[in-house]
Amino acid sequence: FAYGITIIQIKQDNMKKTRFTFTNACKALFIALAACALPLGFSSCGDDDGNGGGDPPGKGEVDNEVGDFDTPAYDEYAAKYEVTNEEGNGFRSIEFTESGNFIIVAKKGTISFTEPEEAEAADVRQTAPATRVSGWNLSHSAGEMRVGDIIYSVLSGPYTVKGENTYFLDGIGTVRVIHEGKTIYSIEITPINDTAPRVLRSTLYEAKYLYSPKTVSLCRTWDLVHFRYYFIQDHRYVVDLEAPTYGELYYKIDQWQAEEDPEYEPDGTLESYEANAPHRILFSKFGTYVIFYNSGRMNLSSWSWADYARGIIAYSRDNLFDGEGKDGNVTVWFRGNKTYVNEAHGYNNGLSSFEEGKEYTLQEVK
Image 1: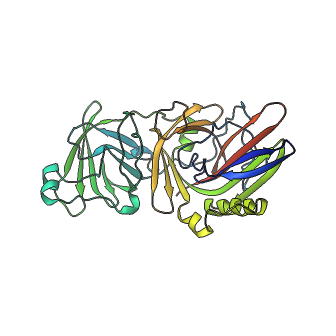
Image 2: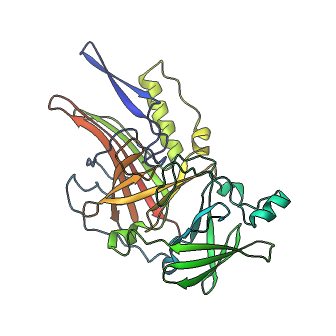
């Protein structure tokens, strides 16, 4: 689940002692949307932050609690539209989330808010502020998977409702949704300081998950408010660290490793870790999953219920859900007004065992 958390590599020296070292080969998990090892639904010990989160449900245990959350403020406006016209000016989809965020995904290149011939003549393209543009080239597309597609930019920010089927997208302009019949819609986008709308033909994307209790609890925008990292070998805690931010947790791990291994060189400073740390996460009932970073970057991917009864979520960076290295599972549970997430992996061959886990506390953004 946590971007940048390293994996402990176990080395046996002459079968007499175990040396623990960190390896940089596995620095991207759920928050970076790429798992380096197969995550399992292990139970963990202890409370995340003393706020009553408790342990995650045991492996194979059904958990029916859904927490105590209000209905998201923009729940009735949540929708996702897939752009269908070929000249769609770089647009693939436009989504309005339950928590009041918009997400615009590009087909390729940058997104233009002017007609193609106008953009070519003026040689300018109006885009959202740089802090909302993902600079990452993802290897595949979001939403409906089309192998070989490339996403160069994703725009996101808050939206407000201006009237019936009319929304204002911060940094973008006004959007009006016109129902043409059945699942066919026209979307008029009028950029800020412009009077000529850009019209996109689209279809309404069917929600993967509607109003099951856990889906309603999960699908909103969350702040990441507490982090925990632990490693257990042969039922003994080797390390168990907690922090209120990702950067601070990573710094603690670095310092612990330096104490354990004189040859270890820390990757950076607390300030550098915090600068690129994840701080917010978004889930929508359309299977959208977004991580926001302190640097202003964002990363977009997909999620689905792998086991609804047991609270197991599958995530996939490349949206294929094929069990390869860009996929993984986490266990999520709801207690009070917080959500807790656990991602763990390990093995037990009867003679020795280890478990490495990451736990996160999420609090809704109001």
